[in-house]
Image 1 (cartoon, rainbow over the protein chains, first blue to last red):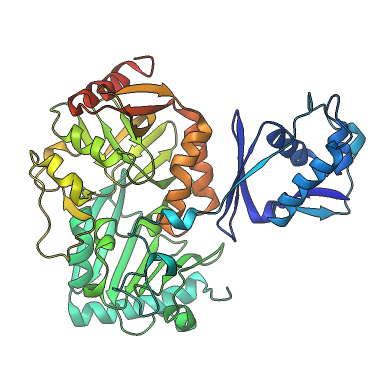
Image 2 (cartoon, one colour):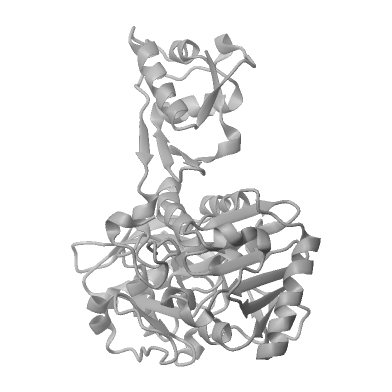
Length: 137
Length: 343
């Protein structure tokens, strides 16, 4: 199975030590560091399979494909990547260095940063009643 | 969402509504220079004028041709027929396409904003007198953000500077950015550009631009600034949870309109007496600026995000570890402004 970045749904920025991806529809954002960021940058270049990614690591253990597959599953579940039939050349993946398990940090708390003074803070009766914390939109 | 209108139909539908309201309730025009560009505000009636202008009143008048003309009026009925569903719902809806420009429907507070591609904007409010107090502190923020793209964007942060440049103080609520900005208000050589939201632009060099002269303080912090002459606007509703103060006119000579962006500082309260700097990454700046900005604006254009990220990549970034001695804050900021982040 080939995977590619779901470009129409996201905004992503690569910094020196971290790639950050926003999924606009959900409002969630995601931090990819180290191996996860390196994999993302490869996916930017071409669609890839889990096995091709795992093979790009030096001294990847047997469970590497499973771990990469799990990582890609998280990206897929959050609609950051999608499956594609439009193949690249998986065997040409640039080396990813020594094996490190890729990890993703998911931030789904953007709505908790509302600070009590933004447009969402209304309850069903509308302004001016403030919604209790548990009922915020 | 399927609710979109073309520029022609927007103008055709909205301008006559505004004209009728202006004829009925009277027209007040304000032409201000914001971020070096002339914005003409046309208010039909008094409610929105009374609610929106205090936070914008520090911008100088301009005689130049307006790059943006904002028409503002009250209406109990939705301004665009197709938006009725959104008008009576709860969720804010942003509508954007290349033809109609950008629209935001905020049914919870009864506010409709549309920016067309021909330099006009239309802001219709269900009842300007009933707008929540935060709309008076940072009015039209999403509209101005949409207008600023692609050269810049509105960001969550405070900004202070001197004659040479300014620093953006970015962080979530409680990180100390407002307190830092207000502390600098007492310094004779430092200027204030914003407390909560500023406009950063990215043309020949990154710039920070003042948008609002409002400042918000939690009650527990008010006593810390008893030496400042902070006053509320008696014509506006109060928010005891976080009082809004207006620095114009009392601090008119302390407010700056625009400065080159020297650095981004990420304040946080430290455990020491002295204030100090420590290196921060670009990603840390992103985390400090972008999520809360998106939340406060109810979303943002990808072009705005690109401009913000470009600016993050162009300026030095440090943590500002705030010490308990308030007097030590301004000297650190002054050194950053005068000497750079090697200070």
